[in-house]
Length: 288
Ligand SMILES: [Zn+2]
Image (cartoon, rainbow, N blue to C red; front, side, top):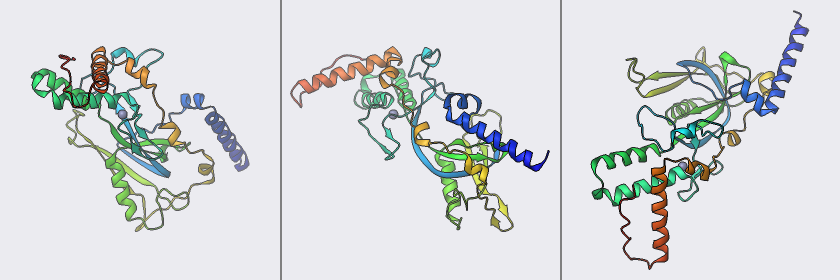
């Protein structure tokens, strides 16, 4: 193949890729935009990262308490296992404790019960609510546009936990030129993923990530973006990572027991507001 022909083909495939990107749906179907970490990879981070909060409401090997009924995860209207916290503002990177997130609301109610009605709960009720409280917790993570050198056909969105982000920022403090994620003076990084349990094979150990520079002699090898890479569209992280569930719908999929629990608490709150302040809360019996 002549060089000209080769370039022509390359341009065609780039144009085709861009076309797919503009039609988000078909693009998503053919190209998984979310990056999957493997034990070892060479990657290039580009642009700014964002900070986000989410709730893992799907099945978990550490906690089998269910917030939602099992049907919630199947069918046309199914809910993803991981949902963004509706109390987190991606723009300001702030958490609003009085926001609309129904998972956080349930967590708050459970916390209050565990605190104020501890003596009224038997051991198994306490354990169950403890687990529910944990299950409603959030995960803080960071998303970043990245190029995987093994599959360099466009950007992907990598989701990073606090540990990996910290090791990247530590690396950054030793990187002089500018920012290692810059288009012109950024560098490739080797990211390794290891299980802390030392390979016992159970897969239950905590996962650790570490990062290092790809070196050229004594220095980090600078890898300016090529013209092709500059032609790729970076993902709008705030749009793609800010998707929100309809909170009323999500709440309607809660296990009926937790729906009743929320309702009982809301009724109590209303009564409190209607009654004189300072009056003792009516004992509405065991709400669960
Ligand atoms: Zn939340």
